[in-house]
Image 1 (spheres, rainbow, N blue to C red):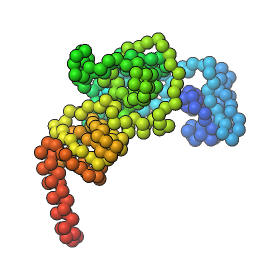
Image 2 (image 1 turned 90 degrees about the vertical axis):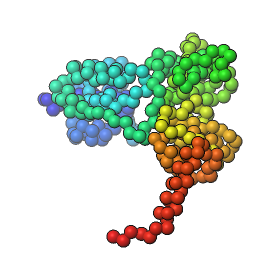
Image 3 (image 1 turned 135 degrees about the vertical axis):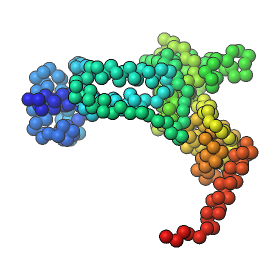
Image 4 (image 1 turned 120 degrees about the vertical axis):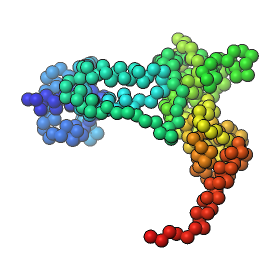
Length: 335
């Protein structure tokens, strides 16, 4: 009976994801035979869970509408996933670290003993490595405003903020008038939150850094538009003027690359800035923990590089080129 109850809860948890499951998939995930899974499905139906059967070669089972799952219906794997997610969540929102810790503590208190033990077995410390490019955290109120507007398709009135999060006043060089935009999608890339929106003021699609926006909600609805690219990720990553600013690094340098801006923007590390020069050239500003680190990243683009700045970056490129040239002439080491 205990095994049957555990399996039924596990089955209900799988169906609760909302996706369509084939009988074979359910049997595999539950480690049971297909006849056993059918019996468990009938057991749940007798408990008034509306499990729908979809017939045909692509059919299966899914949980129908109109039934709320019991609260905190987690299985062993879900409990582990929650424990890892809450402890490794990036700090992209103000106070998220404290909120994640409190959420984990709350879940520990209400979990059954077996699941609580599994979650506590994954106490960990998250260390940041040098290849992570930190992003400034976002005000939860601004993110909620944008997310609500995306969900309900309501226009936003937005003003641009400086890189430090302050609002420029009229007359400041950084001041831009407010724009009316249609927010369509939120995208997270390299720990940065981006908004894909149609700008009604400029009549073109744009990608905005959410932490660089001061959004004001409206009650005006808009209709969905065809996106500028079927691949939303490609559109965001290849848009060079998405409001990025250089991340804080010990060293920052610039270079002119013989590549289009949208190509460089696609592969440039988070925290770098791509400036459009013409259809075949752009300027890349990026940082690293050393001048050699910047030179190494520039070399990965495998193209012509000019206008290096500052002089320390030029010296680093020359040293690396000399070392590589020397390595190519040395005889192989005999082992």
